[in-house]
Image (cartoon, rainbow, N blue to C red; front, side, top):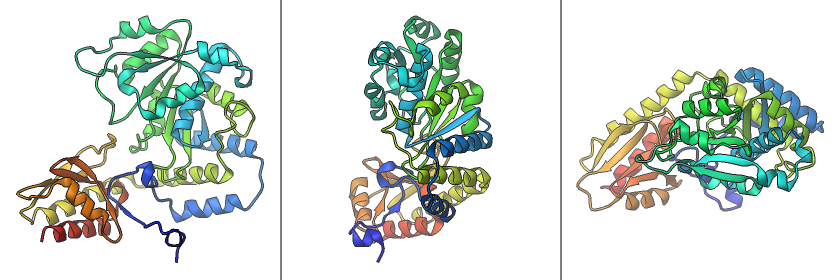
Length: 370
């Protein structure tokens, strides 16, 4: 009996993707072994954070790196460093008034449940542009919104953003004109692997990634990459130091685990990995299209805007809708989770599946329609 069985928590087959609520990703045996090794000894956490950051910076072609406890925490810490730079102070000397008077520029179409960290930090948030096509945000709008109080621009890179915000390239140009840092929320923007350095090479000051999604590191980890001046401020005041970042605890196990996972990720054959996803999509389409009740096709990119294909399954000539089939799949043994596209279609995402699992899922879908 495993620990999940002891707790009566069923193990599931994940056809949705690297969603936090379902555990993000599965770590490799190497990552688990490295975390086990890290857990067995006492070390100086300050030194571990510094040395790991230096090693990750070299691997990702960045000036500096910092391991945190999730992407949302990374945004909080990145903005904290930007405010300290703006105020000309070390983080530990910042007052609540300094934070309150510091303005962060955000595009309305980039608002999300995760940016509540800005309110928790206590900064002033200035929204710009509307979330539609008719009122786009030109360069002069950004210029007009920036003032002496502006400490940074927060930019969300995601497949879920609404239209209305300027491109990242345009935003970088505006930020450089005013000498402002850009804190980029790129939590789910892997693959491709070169995003680990592409954003910062393009002019982003700090790019933040989730450690527990495609990197397959510990779920409670995140990665901040970019400008050394800003990350040095974090090293002086963020965990394990006392102050504003103390409560964002990241253990030696997460730091080592993310470093281990990152090394494996960069050594991975990315083309082979993408080909596996394509093969899974072809397999699912060949199985499901043999049944008159289904019409399966390749959908690209996936829900997060990642360059990985998935299967779009349309229901044809059936009385059931997507909700019925997804409910049926969730009651299989083991349970299968997938996401609806609309009332009459749903997705199967190969990102978190093996070929054997994809084949088994398709067999269960066909059993439903007997």
